[in-house]
Image (cartoon, rainbow, N blue to C red; front, side, top):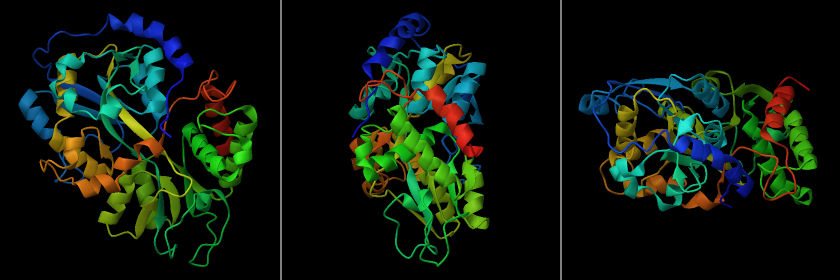
Length: 385
């Protein structure tokens, strides 16, 4: 079911919304400052260096004079830390980071009237609760999609139907155990993947939302992750290291992003991906403007540029994501097609459990384990505690 943020979170951030409201709301876009610094997920800001066919930076620089620099972040926590340090203009934040940055006054409201292509954005994203607080917008939707189960097709005679292949010891169809051949995500939000698995297989736990866990539910998720640790060869956070591991280190299954699947398949590595029967967590990413951005004119020019249908289309193909501009699937201005968008999960929006930050005052339970506990406890799991 589509995830919604709780009233308590919105209320706690309202003060921040009012306080930061005076920072932004530019009324017009002036000359670009000549530079633009972006914190982004791997593969999100391409200038043709990885593959010459995928370049949506060069044309922007030529047209605006805003020279783009990119700092790749591997986790949402890293994005929050970088934005706290400052020195960046924009960040492509997922839902488990965006409200933290709004509450922390690290990002400022945006004036959507200065983004002409805003009207082309998917209606399901325009008021999304991970970037909109009390009617105030804090970002421009970029891309969204599911976290997929990537698997080696030589180790699996048929596509796996369950996430159990990364959580439980089992013999695969190649006759070998999965132990030592699987990976898990190196981020506390992975606890939600364990909770999502338990929602399906242990309904008596009463989990209604994998980001809203009572202490008992949380303990069960941690126990599953400790079990998983016995199988895991590497906790990944760098997409390119995971790619290398599936090429050269004998990895056969892991939670992943379509980006890695696409690049591996392009190199003829025998991998495929699936969303198993338990469903999947996912991400809906928003480009957000730093509260102290030094290049706001270039930033607004980029937020308009990112909604261009050819960028949305080509990025959708490159990353294996769903564009925030639905027309990009069909208008022929880029590489994407309706079939491609369907394959990337266009119709699964309401089934994806989008990343969000766990809080104590939650909607589905009387009280939930907050995110700071997720951070410390997941470090403990990885460390063998």
